[in-house]
Length: 142
Image (cartoon, rainbow, N blue to C red; front, side):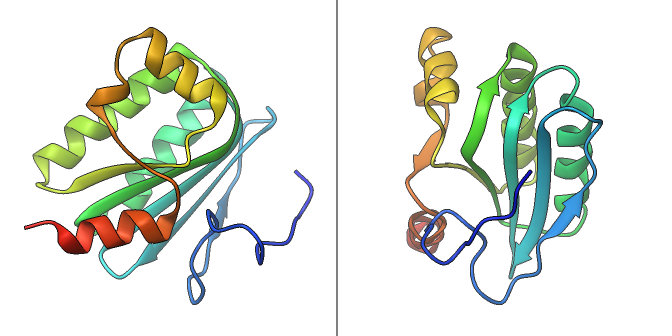
């Protein structure tokens, strides 16, 4: 994937974090993870299909290995979202609930929103426009 500036995009990792690239399986897909305090952030980029799902699942496992109170999935760069991606989101929702943590879907792309809508799961997830919005909502949480 070509590099691009993160200065103008509010969906990118906050300043002071060090995103770590996770190698993909040869499909047009990349995953980056970072931690911001007790928030685990995972950025998906490209086509989340059955070829990319193992890399995505492994990145989620690495991101949530240490204690966290929110898992933020940054989804604005997802260009294709297959049903296995939906299963991954449901798994993430189950795991965050098991850890008494919040799950935030940050800026879901149109393909993701379409599948969430068709599967009648839009209301099952908390959606935020930016990382800052998700962090602000978490700080208001009781």
